[in-house]
Length: 220
Image (cartoon, rainbow, N blue to C red; front, top):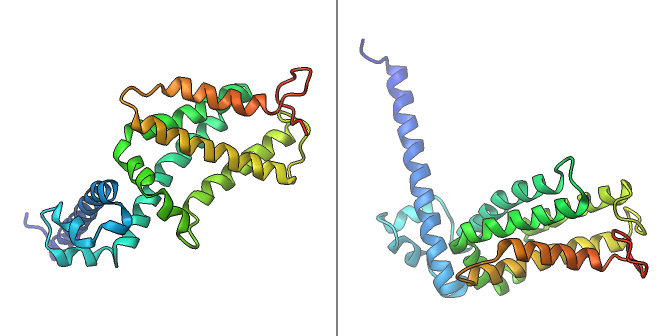
């Protein structure tokens, strides 16, 4: 039986959407390479298109300029990292130290797996810091803040109040350390992901010990 007009139209629409998705993915893959090599400032939309088999004008069917495709790459990092890391922080049946270490390990493993994508972050750290209104990484810090506040509420981190400024400071410090350690691991030929995760966890927790050595207590 021959396909109906509706079925033909649906098939054409699906193929068009598939082609659009493939073109966009091809441009994003090319952008990773170009931004990692040249940085945001030195790269152009033309440089990105040259790494594909697409016509120059195709770029503007998906992105208005190089800044927009750069933001899309940042969103890609966030979309991959946030759920993966948070799942470890919220894992049931594990101690705070185990969850914290597993979260760092998950982030560092992702950095090594997605080396080129993280090289984009490393190569363009200054440009990212200067982007006004950029909330991509702020969302991850906010989630971390919420989780730390929950740890405080549950009594896993003593000496803090959920609404205290120190909770925000701690979230910012943990996220910043993870980002910079990940950059170091990406640059290493044989990255010790487990060792880096243990180091970050112990450094954070050791800063919360009272003089008697009790872990999980914020010392002022």
